[in-house]
Length: 300
Image 1 (cartoon, rainbow, N blue to C red):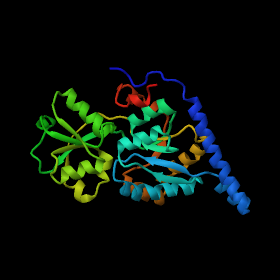
Image 2: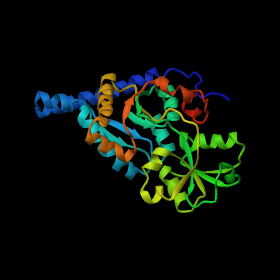
Image 3: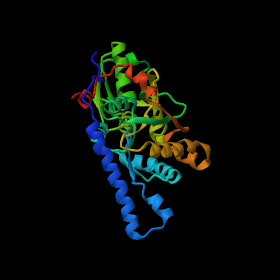
Image 4: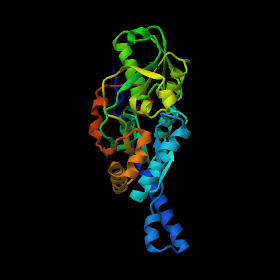
């Protein structure tokens, strides 16, 4: 299979423009406060420009804002780095916004990470603690389906073509087992779970974390039919225009969350036990899969 990681022309001129844009934002913040005559302590805090933090839309935008907004606010408070919640209407739109460098920091699926690390230089700095990522197939609890083979010839819903664990991995398992299905794509993990729980669809792909975080009336109506092998989970990654010292402050704040009651309370809605430091090499297991779905972002 051809690889998406073919050599492409250097992106250095583009990255230089991004670094200059970050510098202009920094200087604008400093100048704005100087004009207001702020004290030195306030100046140091306000000089840090706000960073856009993009969250992959596994759920609806309103729900993501409800769950991630307070967490990002606490990370901002602990790090002294202002963070602004951002997402996208769906996963393909999120991919386009990553490609346009609209996010300074982003929480993205493992496949997105290896693609946009190669294409734009995003660098991983954190990941979820104590969990490997598996795709799951869900059916209603009262469903007659008991094995994956029972879904032969049926329609199975998935969040998006490049949703790694919820779409790519389950479809790969169907292919490996030579079980034909009709794949249908919807807006998000939430959309998959709701469609299956309501009986509109017979089966769907997702991940355990978003299932655990689903409303009780959805989660309690579903049963996990099967799961895929495990891989390194989603990456928290920084665009190369963000200075390493700023990333380090955000990372320190993130890894501190599991150590106190406030942090644990904010992690709970996301079904996170904690966050830990990560390195680019952690996603070599994803690279080894040689997935070829987003070539347009890496080819010249």
